[in-house]
Image (cartoon, rainbow, N blue to C red; front, side):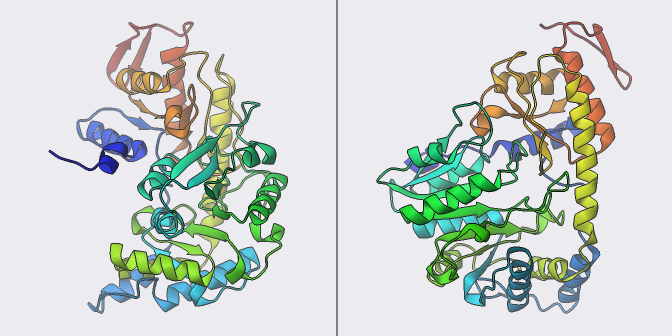
Length: 406
């Protein structure tokens, strides 16, 4: 079969593939523990469900404006004013089929072939492939100190004649690290001075722990007029409201940029699904207690996972300040993260995501958005598989496992 060069160059999403693998194993009755997932286990807010059902009950589910229904855009504007202290006009807002599509149409709107997009490592697995899909060149920046937050100087060193944009994701997927105010302020200043787009992927910015509050990137901007700014903020209902399946995200940016993004989106999908938009508007306009409830649950889960990992000899982990992921360094056990992830799935039925997919070898992304039982049993299984001093046998339900590997 003849495929395009682009199609041959794009990899399958490893996280979605792992979800599929885990589901298939569960269907076969395998005792799988999924520590690779990116979905909160809580239910969607009742206000979202009621709002969605109110549309469905009319039976009048039609096309919507390509950039989103007015009631959703109004809710997004209110959210932006409340949490970012910026007053946006409807023309500054586009609603999309998830934050991923908002970012994708943004990249299509700003990139010419071979222009570069810079982002810190570790990075969300889709950033490099999305940049390539838009004809651009992804440029990851790895901190020289081996940490998860490069310096502003290191970001600046990556800027070249073809650089068009930078992307920051804080709290970060996969590390859970919350970038410092100084780093975000420095990157905002750098992008304004170099006339670069700065894309703030704020997907997880309400899920922050230890009493910290989300960093408002606009606070550091010298350009205060949205229509003159190259600062773009992307968000969604997927994580903070546990509404991953509704696929609604949005972007806030300059009118000219949003108009171009809307034109592109109108040719791709004609706009997000109407029931999902009504659901998202219901969530944004409704009672907000579900966010804090989820945040507290995740913070407790994080503490459980950190305690378990602390007892694991040779494994180094940075305590995540947000999201529902951590990114331990298992290189003392096995440098090849794909080999290690496969071993854990094959031998003890624990799903993890290889660090190689996020730009850092030797690490695994572990999710703590599941139950405490899954976290404790999952880490115990991993420890049994990798700790030479562990007993030679382990029971998974009625099944006895014998460690026949090193």
